[in-house]
Image (cartoon, rainbow, N blue to C red; front, side):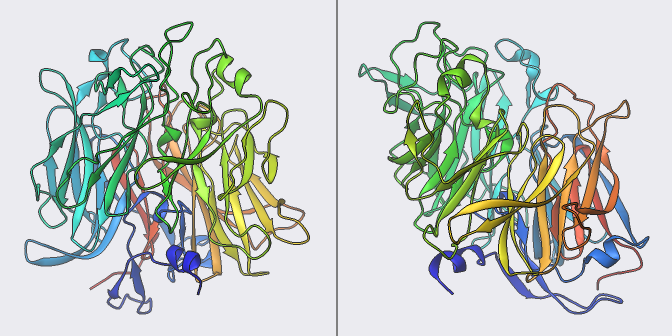
Amino acid sequence: MNHRTSFYFSLAIAACAVLLVPRATVAQVTVSTYHYDNYRTGWNNQETQLTPGNVGSPSFGLLHKVSVDDQVDAQPLFVPNVTISRHTHDVVYVATEGNTIYAIDADSGAVLLSQNFGPPVPYTSLPGACGNNGPNVGINSTPVIDTSSGTLYVITYTLEGSQTYTIHALSLSTLTDQVPPVVISASHKLANGKQFFFNASVQRQRPGLLLANGNIYAGFGSFCDINANLSRGWLLGWATGTLTPLSASFLTDREKSSPDAFFLSSIWMSGYGIAADPNGDLFFVTGNSDYSGTTYNRTTNIAESVVKVNPALSRLNYFTPSDEISLDQEDTDFGSGGILLLPQQPGPIPNLAVAAGKDGNMYLMNQERLGGYSPNVNHVVGTYGIGGCWCGQSYYVDPSDNTARVVSSGGNSVGVWKVQTHPHVALVNVSSAGINSGQDPGFFTSISSDGNANPIIWAVGRPFDRTNNVTLYAFDPEQGGGGSLTQIYSGTAGNWPNLGGNANLVPVVADGEVFVASYKTLDIFGLTGTRKK
């Protein structure tokens, strides 16, 4: 197994699970980060319990509905065999906008622990009263877990005199701080040599956290592009264990001035996590800058771009679409979607990546030479229309031909794309299906399979009618014909009354169960008539 492929398969696997009735003994997977791994594939290939046959039967459905204190924008995380109060549990960790972390027993739905980390920031207290969120802004991004040390890293947002971001390192067993938490601050030089300081009142910490290189990394954007004279895209990092801030930071926009005092180039990606390759290099996508369309600069203002930086946060490479000017002018953020790194492929371009944004173009790129910028042509591997993407792609290997697939989720459509590596590298659409989803276009998916066998594509649709319910879907990519995916399940998976802010919900599949966190609830789905020890 080559280095890059082994990196993908390095999902933390616990020892052995106990017997289920009537299910067999299986290994248990750990979901410790956004979209399962640092490539952000969204693929759990250790799922032996759920198959297209039983998910499509009456035996699959809602098992537990667990109440939490506020809206959940973060993806749930799952760790098996955690000792809490001298008992061992398979635990789902849920972080809310109320600044509360919950440890929930995955089998019974019982709340084992909860800890609150201070009063969240009411959106009405934010400059401009941005409504693109719930009434509170607390934990907005997906935490990350270091299983080797039993530590959950999370960033909270509190109002205690002023808006404050704080990074915590919490024990998985107690949810208490293992080292003193650190208030987030930073500064960076602008192009004119002046220091620009991080301002917590105008920066939004939305992308999922990344654990790589012995560090925790976090990206920051803005609240609804309000106070764009003060807000810019930041990438910051802290050492694991001590939470010592990295000496370097990355600022996407270092312009000294702009026609409209409008800066940004935010890192937000609809909550998608910053990605990392096996070398520890980081990848993310930026959003719009000044609506004049005149301030893009490949050195000082990397707006509307995929950006690659090294572990020390120095830029290595980038790709900016040729229509960058109009993207800025029309607020058509490329950065509304995240970047997926494909595990190594055969053929002339082994290290590929895909990203899409509001305009619905999904770009296939070479990770080593992303494409740079030309106002005339995009120097990428391929461009594909998927529909507006406040979303992010997923990945799996199909058992029919043992060839990689990219799953897109732009507009209201799940699309499956075969990764063609010969005679030239391309994506070929092989199947698709529509779902009911409202708010902004796009949604999020994940994949489960047993090795490559029995793949299931899972999706959560945003609220689309007066009920404000969100919907869990499951599709069998091996059934159907004529390019159509076969839907095998759909059901209500919580509620989302905050229609001003997208339900960027990611379904998490682990150990025979599916977890969907939404407004004040965690819904746990699985097979009825089964039990664990």
